[in-house]
Length: 77
Image 1 (cartoon, rainbow, N blue to C red):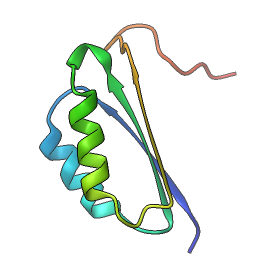
Image 2: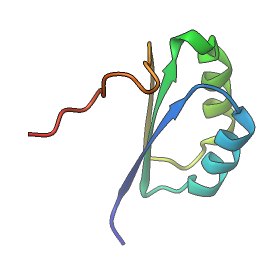
Image 3: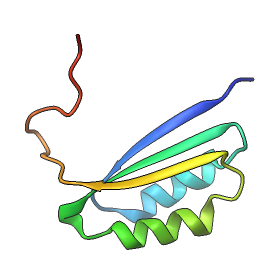
Image 4: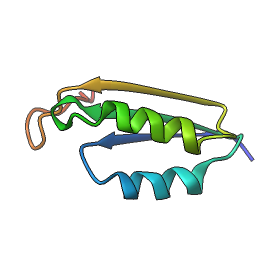
């Protein structure tokens, strides 16, 4: 089986993120987390990632302002 990458955009509700991370903690997976900086949860998410992810090959976290329902971050060409 191949490798998989998961992207989570986090604003609130750490319990849902925790459950998802526990389910995908596998050596074939990569996890990327974008935290809405307006939520002030960056440090909590960092601690959660470090405590749960034991087998994931790669994970990264960044903090950025997210405009929910605003201009999309991705542009399709």
